[in-house]
Amino acid sequence: MTYMPRVAAATEAEWSDLAAELDRWEETGRTARLWWRDDDAVAATPALDRLLGLAHGIPLGLAVIPEPAEPALAERLAGEPLIAVLQHGWRHADHAAAGKKSEYPLERDAGEVAAELAVGQRRLATMFGARALPVLVPPWNRFADRFVPLLAEIGIAAISQQAPRTAAPSGVAAIDVHLDVTAWHTGRGFVGTGAALGRLIVELQARRMTGDGTAIGVLTHHLVMDMATEAFLARLGGAVERHPAARWCAISDLMAAP
Image (cartoon, rainbow, N blue to C red; front, side, top):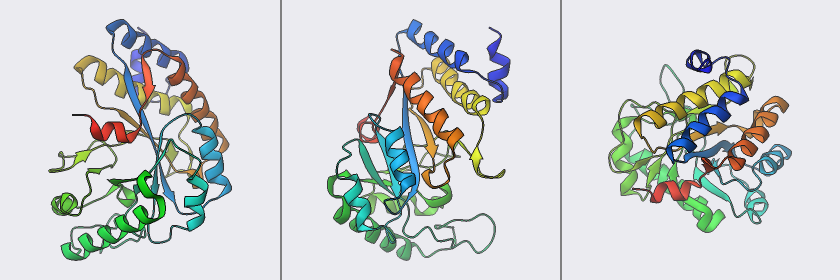
């Protein structure tokens, strides 16, 4: 099929390519699973309102920064049953001595990290109740491997970062994202429909060909979301909901999966 080379390049895929790939899933009798994560929530803002409007009817994992999170955010989410709250570190602060930003770089004290995460977990549970899930979303998607064993000890059941990862975490589930629709290095706008669909179809193809049942994670950041991103997400949401071989999953369901 002619769409294969374009998809491999992840730059020129079209909506018809996505439909064709999902049709192939339907032919195999399998259903592709997707999930949606949005990062950096702190307050009830117009940007959050637009996000929740886009996600209406779709489960969403909202990564909330515990330390600065405002009570008004909990009030805003009270009527949103499909929104789960995930722990986005503690205060989204960079502690890296050098190199790429990280709240949990290798050089931090393990006891300090464990205590900080535990406090953040308790604060989210107090603010959001049962919708606060024991899932860590490390800021900048970075978390030193040596701290992973601490997570289960403080009650964190899963970690969500950016795929691909170098190794599977030990003792907790990995529920990662695969498609970040934000062009961070070129103005923080939308990466473009061709690139976004290309990346998504690459992930779909890999799972169809190997039998991998991992859900594909879509990552957004509502505070920098532009109109082009919103238009893409609205169309993607509809495409997945309408196709019999695709569905949106709640992260709670992914945590329960074997």
